Image (cartoon, rainbow, N blue to C red; front, side, top):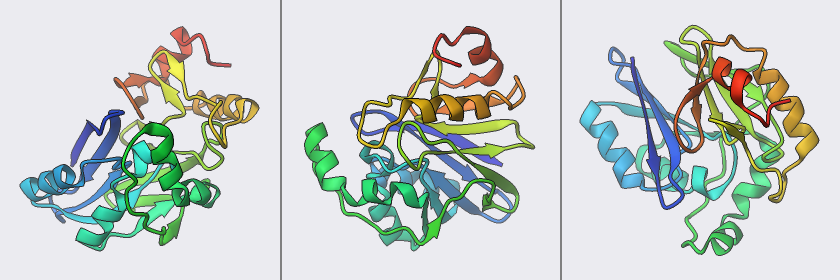
Length: 207
């Protein structure tokens, strides 16, 4: 399997690419910007994009989705509670002083407990509202990997003071993540990766 995570755009949100070297299929999580760079990397690896998954609907995680969907035909998946955020992309761009990208309506809905991704690299959706109303994390149990979006960071947690944020919901969501094994690697929405155990033992914001 191919697993790459790299920051994109001015806010350096992490985009994760998962590819199968046998089937030559791939999914991308949170392509927030720089669609040509993502497409180029897929081409370099000889992969065909079969799905785009969003942990939430903020511009810095979703800004390149329309361009990728148009270029590849890959379907977009998002929790329906964050559809209003996705539809407000122009307003988000104004707040952040960025150009507004096109908006692509999701073909698929993420829901707690469903399995998404590829057959060879299944990802279980964990509904984790708090940063936004529809925030989700993606958990690959066999690989002991969590793609956390902006729910959990190394040494910190996601903001809850933005539209759609809710601190009590965030605390409940973080408790769910702490049920995962300590050796679970966490790819955060921004910054460096961490593990559940490291955050359990040292993160001052965890419940």
